[in-house]
Length: 96
Image (cartoon, rainbow, N blue to C red; front, side, top):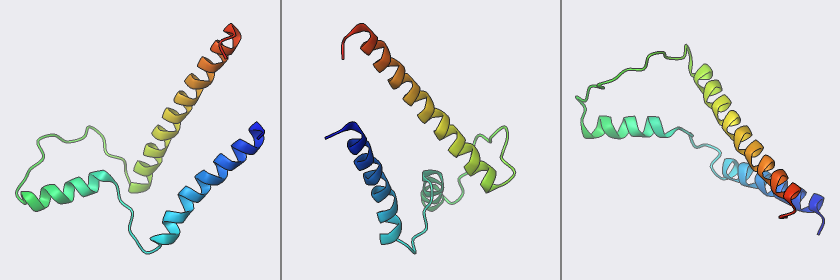
């Protein structure tokens, strides 16, 4: 099997893994771990007061999501660059 065919199969698999849960749980609300943790803490101790507060809060939820997505994209880019550079370095040494 060629590399292009393998890559196309992997891309198709990723698309299926991303779309199928959305179709199976079309009416579900998707939330983050922070919100779930806050709900559990509020349930266990309704009088809990946070002992720390953030230095800066994003002006809206959309900005917060944008910053989170940007952080994830930068992390993925860094990991991809590192893996690619490592493979190229190993290939140039004749290890692959």
